[in-house]
Every structure is written in C-alpha cells, then in structure tokens.
Length: 443
Image (cartoon, rainbow, N blue to C red; front, top):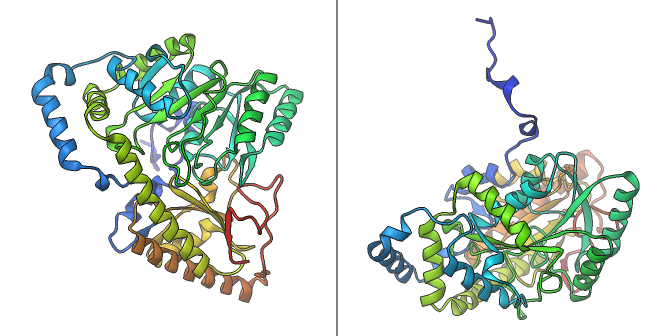
C-alpha cells in the first residue's frame, strides 16, 4: 500500500471526456436554496402548486388502476403514439403545422433530447455555436461530447445575425467543423430576451446559405406575457431546424417528458440512441401527459401560469428599478422565467456570492452560462418560483449586498462606481443602449 493513497484510486482510469466535468452553478446552490430563511432567485422551478393538483392526482390514479398493464410496462423507444399526436397539436400553436407524429421522438425532458442530438451529430473537437450567454445544461452536454463551444453575441433582440455570419466565416477560414447552432429563441435562459421576427428570418436564411443545422430549444414559447406565441424557426425550415420541446414549464417538470421533432432519417438515429441509453422513455409519465392534454383544460392552465409569472416578473422589475444602485442594468423579459442583470463596473457576481448567501438571498453567477468562464459581471435572477413579496424582499437583500460590495471596492481598490454605460457589439452577455425601453436601469 502506498504511504499516501490517492483519494480516488480509479483516477487514472476515467475517460478523457470526464476531465472537464464540474458541478453546474445552479446545482451547487441546491443545499443553500432549500434553507427556509433564504430567498432564492436562483433556480428556474415552475410554480407547480398552481396546477389543479387534486384533478391531476385523480387522473394519474385512474391511469394506474385502469390501465396498469400498459402504463407500468416497457414502451416504444420512440414514445407513445397518442402522446406524439398531441405533441403535434401543441407545436401547431407556434406555427409548426406540417409536423407528423412519425417525426417526433419522446424524451426524458428536453435535456435528454439535446443530449441525444449531440451524440448523433458531434464528434470530439467539433464546434458548436451557441448564444453568449447560453443555457448551462446545454453547455454541460457539449462539454461531455468534447465539443468546442463558440459563443455568438446577443443584444435585447436576441442573437445577432451579423455576428453569427462572422463566426461562420471565421470557423470556415480556420478549418473548424461547425456541427450546429444551438439557440433558445423565446424568453431566453438566462438572458430573458426574445429573438425578433426579422432576425428569425435572417437566421433561417443564413442557415440555408451556409448549410447550417439549427437546434431550436423552446421550453418557454407558450409563456409570453403580452403576445401570442411567435412562429418557430422550425415552422420556417423543416430540413435544417431540429426542434426541442418540453412539458416541464407548461405542465410538470417532475414528469420529465420532452420531445425532439426531426427529419425521419435523424429520427431513426435518435431512437437507436434512446434505446441504447434508456431503452424507452417512462410509460406512466407519457400516459399521464397524454391524458392531461386529452381531459384537462390545459390551454387555460397555461394562461393561468402566464398571469402568475407576469405578476412575479412585474414585482422583480419594479423592485429592481426602486432599489438597485446606479450602474446596475438588467433585461426586461416579456415572457419566461428570467432577468439577466449586469453589475456595476468592477464587481464579480461569483466572488460576491458568499456575501449574498450570508444575507439570505441566492442567485446564479453569470460565469455558469459561458463555456470560456467569462460573464463575471452578470447574474441570473429567476422570478418564477417565489411569491411577489418574497421577490421584493430578495431584491432588497441583493441590492444591499451590491451596495456593500461597491463600498468595499470604492474604499480599497479605487474602482470607478460611476454611471455604467452599456455597449453592444462583441461584449459577452446581453448589453445594449441604456436608453432602451426593453431595459430597466438606474444609471
């Protein structure tokens, strides 16, 4: 036996793909946000208590008692046929009217769908284009596939088409293989912004011009506060756009039911990858979602969610406008779950986090949403789960933490804490003119 045995005797046996694995900034906060004294503006947990829980419970009980032989048994690797039909009805609300149930693969949440798509298309060293910032779960999938992520800048109208074309040209000149663009066009996680209509068409045209595959991840598309659902990218191009959907935000995240809409040739490979990974998605949860869509007023329930999240969004924005110190800016989402906040010059959200936890408020530092470790001056605030009064209290605590951090920097580092002027073009994260009516500011 060695005198000083290693903590992990299997360390030299792990696959190379595990070397960069790390806990996500969101998962690392779970032990903190579960404490009752902490106001969590961190996790994007839907307000499932707003569901008709008695009706849902009775529905699931009836499924087991009446159809246990089917609901508790193995199923198809592609997913339940009835559920796939209803998924096509849901997608039609966003203009995808040509989808066939045969093109749909049911997954264990859209997270598994993204993992399957990445397994099918990405080899180690390939380049994936993704918005900067980008969904932390997607970055974990790409890292596990040993892909190289190149971020494409955004502003308050979403992904910038000119920046996307520049990235494509530079990758082509460098001999890099770009496998796809990953985008969350509606009520972006974490930025809260939405891709504008002209830019949607521009990105589809770029995909055609450069033969670019687009992965459209759309868990929030039905949760717009002030407008009808926007027409999906997939509704504009059925050859180059693969669509990921989920019932986690419009029904229940605990059921873990999502889907992929892909051309038939891709679908076949996704089903094979599913069977190798989990054999089949869980039957009971699929039947539960299908029965919910068949028997419950789910469209009215989505409208109820929208009203609830709008009220909480308003509480967050009003509190930010009233309490945040000068130099702080943030996005103004018109749907979804998130506000993306930029700190005054010189502050670091990750370094400030212990002070915030001590003050009993939690957020997600911006560095978790960049593959290159940038984004230190940003944080994601989630308003979907806390009650409005809790949101106001959480923002009050956060503002005091930021003010204390500014005082420290002003005293010891001579950091300029004057008015922050947001600039666009090439900067990481979401920045734009301080006068934009899509932004709140105290500059």
